[in-house]
Length: 392
Image (tube, rainbow, N blue to C red; front, side, top):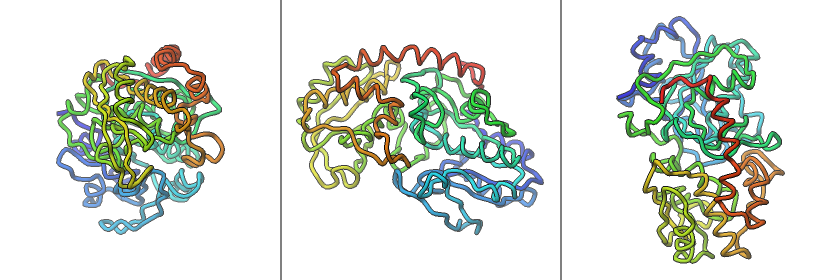
């Protein structure tokens, strides 16, 4: 079993934090291999001064659904205020300077899922920027990228389409751990905080989460399993359309559809489209919340049959291409708002450019789109190389 940054901090008997005023940016995933939470560890100590708790999207315990603003609450264990970093406005995304001035160090320990849309690493970016302004140190307790760190897939955003689902230009499936993302943010984008990363022990870049021997704790309400994380880099694109991405079902992001879809026709189209590593099974489903709640939807379930060939971003594009071609009068791209953005289209924010949407509407297929991203992939692999902490 590998050791996370938290496990290594425990091994060090928390020496890097002794005598310091500490703030934690955590959620329910900040647990060791025995499922003891970082807050529990620190609250039991007299030589570490836990002063502040901060939580990302979905809240401290991951109970809030996506894009639901979270207010500050009182933590029942410590009595401390939990300051939300996912409030009602963009100004709520960064920690307050007064909180940071009362700290010597801000510790970040949250499990990421390896896709640029997932907002936790961008919460980290806000924390690093805010810490730099007031001189508070930042420590990242690293955790594995659950879908591996050897593969890079998808495009890089245009500068005009950076947002909270991609604050800095990175590939969709970036293949980095949170600690490596932090190093990249500092080295490439000039976030000049005092940064340290307590690295993983024993993790290799081609390890998927199951190889770690660690317990999976859902990072958010609709990320119940590693299989969900595997397809998320592509299927999250459906949030920018009128297709259900499976929220309100037991297999979010693996199930997709809408009331206007014939599932057999869609599955036949997609299975003949040469999407690597996956098969599509026709099905009907009825979401309990989210898009089309309570309505019967036709669609498909995406089954990963070969992880070594899987390109989830291409799979997501293939779905959008197929539905737009088969049901052009019923399919549409969603309107704003989306993740604090009031004007730009949600699909364009997720894709990082309007060019992908425009190409789909012009009849470009997913193979041609995938080919157009190869330059981005090579550039990003080169850019990230100096910041990697782990071997292939």
